[in-house]
Amino acid sequence: MSHNGQKATAMTAQPVKMTRPKHWDEAVEEAYRFQKAGWRDAVEYQTLGTNAPPIERWPHNGYIKKLTRKVDGFFYYYNRNRECPDRDIHRTKLYEY
Image 1 (cartoon, rainbow, N blue to C red):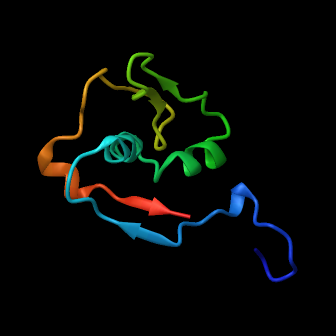
Image 2 (image 1 turned 90 degrees about the horizontal axis):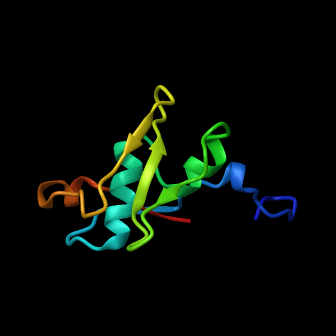
C-alpha cells in the first residue's frame, strides 16, 4: 500500500526480498529463463515489456518456450527440457513481492 491508502499498481511493484536457491526446482527454472533474457522475473516482463508478446509455454510441462529479450527485442527460444545447469543454480535470483 502507498502512503495515501491506494494499492500499489503492477507498474510500481518492486520486490521486497531476494534469495538465491540452493537446489533446482521449477521456480528456479522459471527465474533462470527470465533472467537469461534480461528480465528480473514475470512481473517485470509483463509490466515493462509493453511491446512484448505473451509468454509462450511448452504444453507438456509449462516451461517457458519463448521470450522477448530485454536489450534488443529479439526472441530467445528455450528447449522443452531443463536449461538451468547445476553451476548456475546459485546465480539465479528468486524475488518475493
